[in-house]
Image (tube, rainbow, N blue to C red):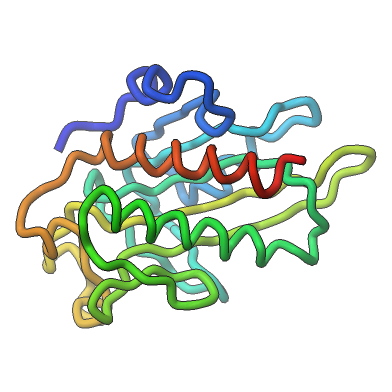
Length: 200
């Protein structure tokens, strides 16, 4: 599969807040950690950082997230939502629902949210969301929204432990999918609904 192209993604997301800046890394430990390293006091929200491979991807409660190189969408978004840190669950719920809705609309698969942060199809996990917030003095809090979406893995790309519990979109559709198109659709949906829910 071809590598994600930061410039092509940015061009497709013109006028969007989420996606105003795109970074694509070949490899990192965790996209959430990589975004935190880039945060500066005056950095605007909307930075999206993709990694083709994570060596230490994380899920909720410290779980490991497997991210086969070049097979999925592993990315994190820098946000400055106008909510309190105690309300971070709202971001998780919102993002998981947008991931599920995008899969239903773009891939025609019946994705549902299993609270608090997972997306399932036919009883198997296809995506997960991880939100981490940091307090800021005299500024909106920082939220790092991490999303992992299984796109083009085969069963062999999952560990033996996960094969019965995880699945990719390509396995369900029985063909490889265009990661670029899926990324653009997902980011556009996140941008539109974020503005409505968290930016005012």
